[in-house]
Image 1 (cartoon, rainbow, N blue to C red):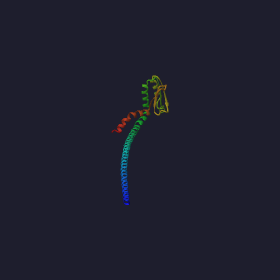
Image 2: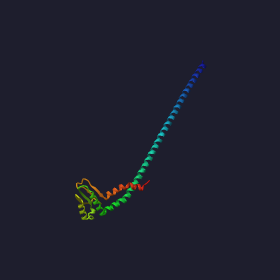
Image 3: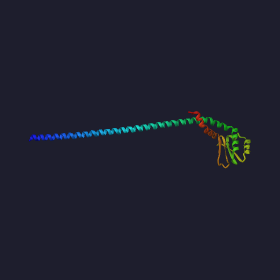
Image 4: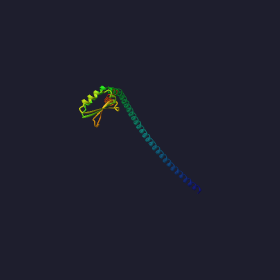
Length: 199
């Protein structure tokens, strides 16, 4: 009986061990499968993050290149504008200043403006620097040639040239060296830039 019991116990033990081993094998296989899945998922996630990072890096690169190109173009345009303005300033500003220092030029200009003036009255305001250079005979002939009432005054605020306006002051036309220089610069700027920077 003791042998039978021993056999029975051995059999139960072997079955238990076999069952435990099978269960352990099953758990181990499931753990391996789970681990493999986790590794694959982690790999996919890492690849997706790398791809996203590469796309962002490419986008940043393109944006940076675009910004640099735009900044370069802007700098070149600004430099061209400065060069053009300097050339015009040296040539046009100097010529305008010299012309408006010449009393004969200013006299002719005043006569032309007064001849074309349509209002019944006018006030002319001249540079104070011209007061000594414009003789009384010119001012008298100017007033005589004008069909309406004309006043002529001198102002320290006007550096060179003159302004003309109706006596009611409703508007004013300015004929100064700066006005003419700006007018010519606006006209000459595109042409000068084209000559200097023709592609």
